[in-house]
Length: 180
Image 1 (tube, rainbow, N blue to C red):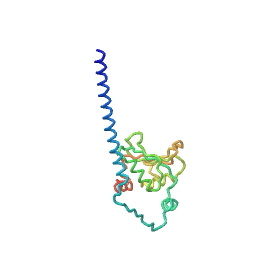
Image 2: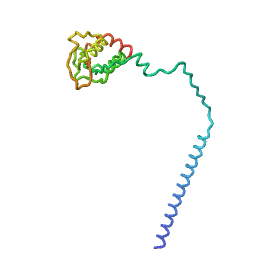
Image 3: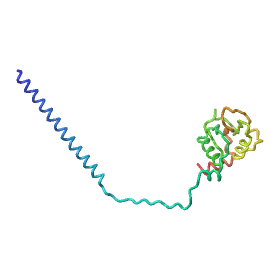
Image 4: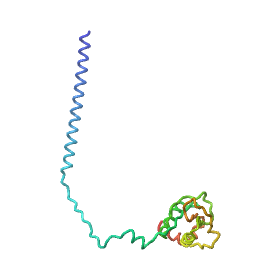
């Protein structure tokens, strides 16, 4: 009985060895195929591409020159959406930046029930309030839209909270209609 078990083990061992040898041969053939394919891709001549760069007609514009043409004023404001219209704060940010005002924060207000748009002065820079109010077409003397509530900890000059009456701000609405 012992020779028969040894014979069975030998057959299993030989068949396992043959299967492993076959797998190695198949893997080798695949590897040679990949190497051949890769070498063909590396030596492929293809169609040559000719790149031409246009000659610059004028000297490049420096950032200093751009700033001189469109100076950004030292006014830091935040724009808050207080009426719930989607992306209104972002569009107003674009509008104010086109007016050379530095918007440092754009977000939602604490709630979306503001009926009127508010411009809140946060420090002693009155010119900041005047510039933002003029950009939005609101009079600085309009107490329903303009407030003075100092808060130096915010690090901004003016807070704009957009209310449900934002559609009365014609310059803003015109900008949004042109730049959706």
